[in-house]
Length: 329
Image 1 (cartoon, rainbow, N blue to C red):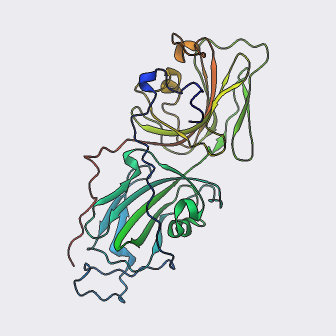
Image 2 (image 1 turned 90 degrees about the vertical axis):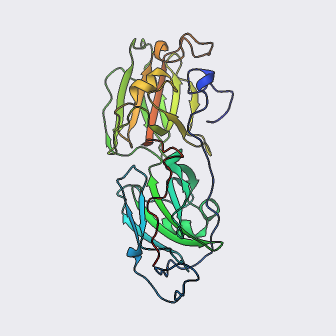
Image 3 (image 1 turned 120 degrees about the vertical axis):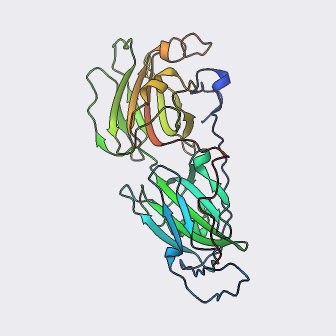
């Protein structure tokens, strides 16, 4: 969230920090090499021929979109050079150099299947499509990828064979436009997707929560207890001024758990059952916003324009176990 002086998205100070942990750990930078991997079914030191090339089918990735991947390997892997394989292609916008990238990352040690990283345990990572942000190999792996893709990337880092599954998430809403109801604020988007909200002049704010989809995404519906990642802008109905936004340059998306009182009630009610990839306008009366608090927004009707980028059930540390232990070859 930009600027600590701005009012928090959450309703109370106790709920200010999301329960999910924003571990913005980066996988170490890896060696520059052609996208080629040589795999064997036997572990290091087991007499494997480093020049022998095994089928990429030595590593299989299963699982549904939006869920942590399941990785199965035919045996401890020896990776000599990187390779990237498309598990399924994306159908959304192509990634642009130096543009924003939102990624779910799941990595295992190819020797024993131990989990090295799993962003489904907390939240996807906000990166830039650049070598500096991603490292050389991951940057090359993502070149030409589209939103919605799942990629399998194999590489070696400091002698450790790494099996990395990457899910490419949207960085803005995309889908079919929906005409808003008459009397609601209007929204215009700039080239990057940042919204400008105009409140109708001399119009009384609604007494009840208004939930108006503006773009209908094609992802799964948001459910109670899911960790959601969003970009949003919030304005006051009274004068149309912006009181908070995640669309400022360099600002990451907001992450919170929906339906458990961690955010204002208007969000808990209004985002449920909306689809991932959607843009939704919420007109939140004080009773479902900051009413009854010491916030400067306590008496304000608030207008939020929210892009829903991801929603998933948080994986606990106890659940973060290897998908399948490789068998000795």
